[in-house]
Image 1 (cartoon, rainbow, N blue to C red):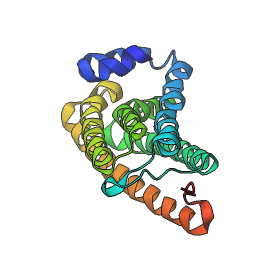
Image 2: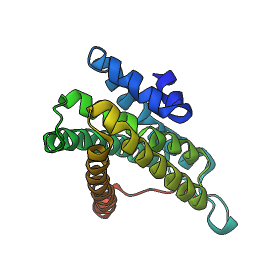
Image 3: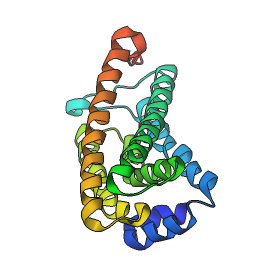
Image 4: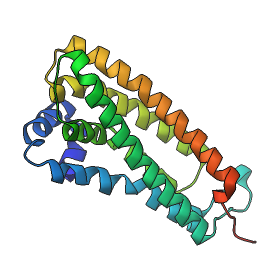
Length: 200
């Protein structure tokens, strides 16, 4: 699994080919990628929010209580896994339109590997900073979109031209999912699942 993660950055075309050749016979192994790496943002956020804290405008760090940080980290983990599964199912639903017939598992695994840069941006949460987080998210989203565009022809076995159109549709839905996650987060805050800060 780690080899594929590193390969996504060093030689993504070659790595997509390797994943494509192994994906059907090692589906359970590949699904573990989703469940393990999706935990990185929540785990790092927990550590960053409870031990380091946010320091807006250079003021004293603001930290969350361990219980509050744990709850928010757990919710973020569920949201990430749910979003990846949803995107995989959407890719499966759209596949016939573009002339391919992949399994649901293949589509979910493809979505999980495409999101690899987004999982890794979660490491930045160890050192909470608004500007650093925004920069990391921008870089992560940009590279994930790149992986999506180059990966679809490899994994879905379709020409580049059709893959480009397919990937464009996936990006649009991905943006809707991202906005929906933000709205749902705000609703959770409204009903009492928001952050609880440490005193002093």
